[in-house]
Image (cartoon, rainbow, N blue to C red; front, side, top):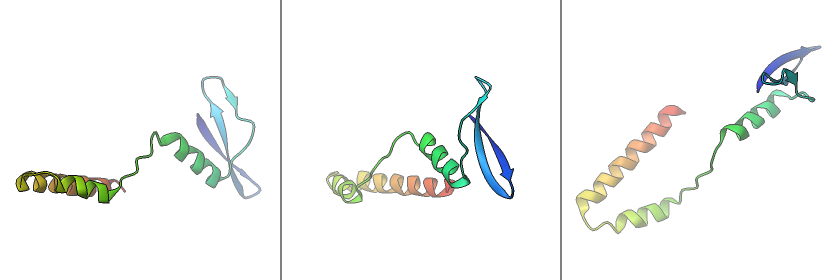
Length: 85
């Protein structure tokens, strides 16, 4: 689905166009509605992380060196995610 930006008497609206069928969607969307729709379509899965449980699991690793490796890897992943924001 592609979207066309339509400015109607200084009001900005968006209308979906299906390239496979050559037809427009019936209604028009505001920018806020379009952003919400695209966000919903883009998100594949919601992952909830309980940091307390993660810390408990890491604490159960018997070898100190391996615990440090896991902490280092988690720090790396956090920095990686921040770099995409």
